Image 1 (cartoon, rainbow over the protein chains, first blue to last red):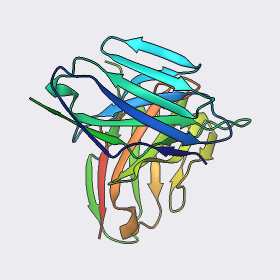
Image 2 (cartoon, helix red, strand yellow):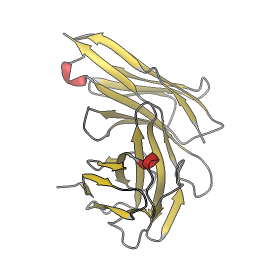
Image 3 (tube, chains in turn orange, green):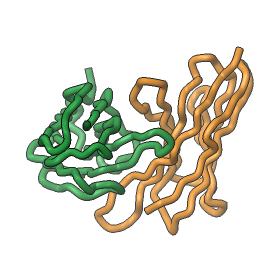
Image 4 (cartoon, one colour):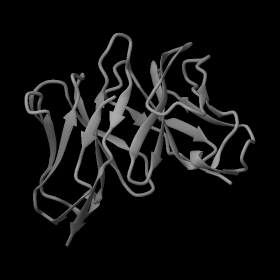
Length: 112
Length: 112
């Protein structure tokens, strides 16, 4: 299986920029995904990086560097509603395998 | 409305009493999956299915069964539940590749 590491908690103020890192130990994978989960809710998909580089979707961007075994989610112009948990995930490689492994999540608290 | 539904949403049961949690999606997705979520452990994949009659184990399959007889349905079966299966369970679906998954609302299971 895969091993993904994320910080457990991050705190930032409204309007700021925050970066949530995800490092992994794996011999290979198909790409890195990010999900958001509000308390009491279900995870929702945010972004996917199949290739190295930056993907931008509105206020959210995601970055992947396979050579550094590292990715991050960047949230700009933080809003109170961005307070949630954020999970990175990778899909396991291998013939016929489509297992998905999630990190343990980063709880983001946005303060006024 | 495109959605993934799960039933029941809440369930309290006793050790050893067989139970089934249903999952249904209306998006014609090939890929469906079950996860459990426990504090500090993130989402862990139990089983997944790449299409009808095609299922495979995730990271934590012990004590669970699944079946995929129809494309839209993917029930999770606990033949003999134990207290360590007390958890929040999510069903998810996606088109092949599992990169953008749609999650159901979750089922909170308590086994006493």
